Length: 239
Ligand code: G3P
Ligand code: CA
Image (cartoon, rainbow, N blue to C red; front, side, top):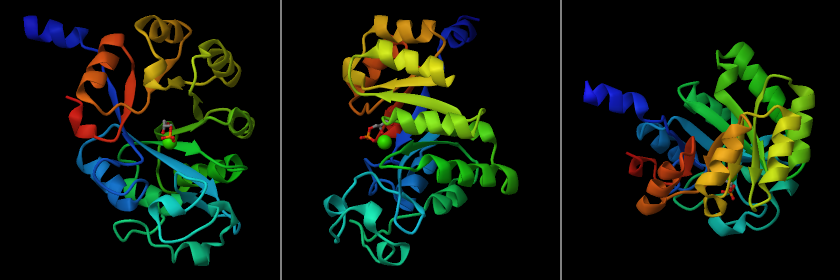
């Protein structure tokens, strides 16, 4: 039928909840992640730092002040003090394990490595959840703007899915890095994209997941460009 042939032509667009669903709940909190799950995303994106006492915490900024009642660099905190910090909306900063327990392998998880020296511990924790808690290894994607952390991730784990984040228009470098890492995706800022750039990356064998696309007209444009997925604060806006 016409309908089924249209549907066959339609490309699958991966909907990736940005910091959970930060359009609706405080970013990178359990509430935000639950909201993304409720909205039916395909994947959830979180940011992580390693703190002084060694835990991997789910948080976006280097410093706490923008969305909390506390000052200072998150990497200088010990877990006891950090768990006292109150975020906007009366939330606490979750550990990576708390997030893994909540998502429970229901959707894929993109862990963006922020700060320094996170690759090793994140690899350990994700392997542990794959081996002991039934997570599919394919449900983990590691990304970073810090490509050294991605290189280290690859050294530690030949199978882990890696996405190369880039914020400028230097796509050739990002593609070269993706080849070196045997990555699955190149993730550009949507404002740097054109239909040709999307094709160029895809022709090299990589998916294009673009961030952070919130406005309906931008979402439509990214669909028209043929991207494979979008990071969005409003997962329900993608029809
Ligand atoms: O992974 C895409 C996007 O999250 C990267 O930018 O600043 O939101 O972490 P940022
Ligand atoms: Ca991020």
